[in-house]
Length: 540
Image (cartoon, rainbow, N blue to C red; front, side):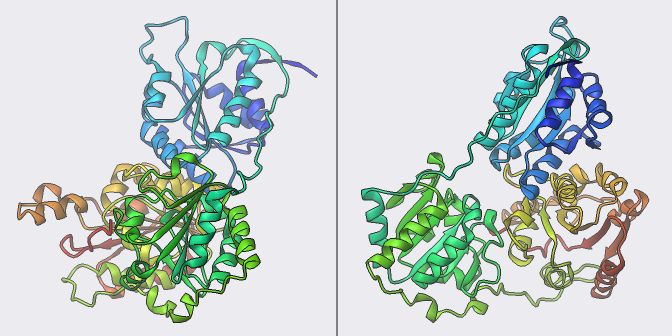
């Protein structure tokens, strides 16, 4: 049955038809009536951000945690240019969202906010769809949702403002998304891969973000081989609690795990592009056989050339390898019998004295790991502090770990923490951010978290400096003063914006803040005052 609607109503209806319950955004000339219709006519929820880029970041985290396609909307011109870093973050993170972006009226090419939005989006690597006519709204929206899921990246749907009050017939239109697993490994290369694995005496299984749905299959293969398990950062937490999980592979490994990796003779890699941080710029892959399995052709051979490459689904391939190992009655390697997992996963703790008025960062992280809620969603901003957080603060599983540094930016953490909180309303969200990142992107959305009543714990690592740059000046024996800042008290700012803030300059004050977690209500911010000369270097 066809119904005649205004275009703004048709867009809202088409979004709702795709099962969308929540939309993030900021309203303007070209999208305000669509947002209103989504809420009032379709029963949807609109989460308003303070900055356009924040709405995209919220949608990205929502997608990562929930597994559903995130939706955001902004108006035209400067609203869209404000989203470019966030869109690029989504592209680099392979996150499927749809951004409904207004566009200036086609009839007014001299509009003050006019810009070639298609060319703008092309630079980010995201996909672009044009709302073609009032009559094609449902088909254009369906195409955007389909592309987001198949291409695993943000798709921007461009909505000319002069369409919004035109009327046209509307008919529901949804494109089926084919979600069958990728190919099954077969042929001569499979035989070579199985041969390499079967002959290995010290094999290891490495899982990346592309293999998080194959956890059980990878564990069965590892147990059969008696091979230790490791993950890339994006698969953090995948093998939590497995007795032979050595945690993160690469520059973020413990010294003992790093040495163990060096001893392996075959690494079977599932769903990872093997970038420089994972391989320590290739050092960890020397003098060993590498088998790489991925459904994405571009992920294979990008950083190093494997000995065997299988363009196939991770889970199906693990099962296939296991089948042939059993058929050939290949004995287990016995590698895990030699391992002490507690030693392999213990990061060293520096016991050196910290100057008065500051807390020891690593010591504080160890205490946070013990005190924070276990069912947390962990979000990390970018900055010098982040690698220690990745190593020392656990996440229950990969979907409960949101890394906002896919584009190497800072200042994206709080916005994504809000999106994670909306996606997981019954779980606490823990954000670790730096002082520079919080000032750049967090302070303008803290009150958004307060208004939403989120269960959000924010830890600000405040060394009163841009730490990554600070250390570069020191390394060259130069004056680092240009990298230092006298920020306001973040604890006081948090309280003034409706949350609860704690400033921590001593172990006793840290304990007071940790005690407050038990009875928290709404967002709580813990500001760790750190000596800029005493923060560990980044492990990259």
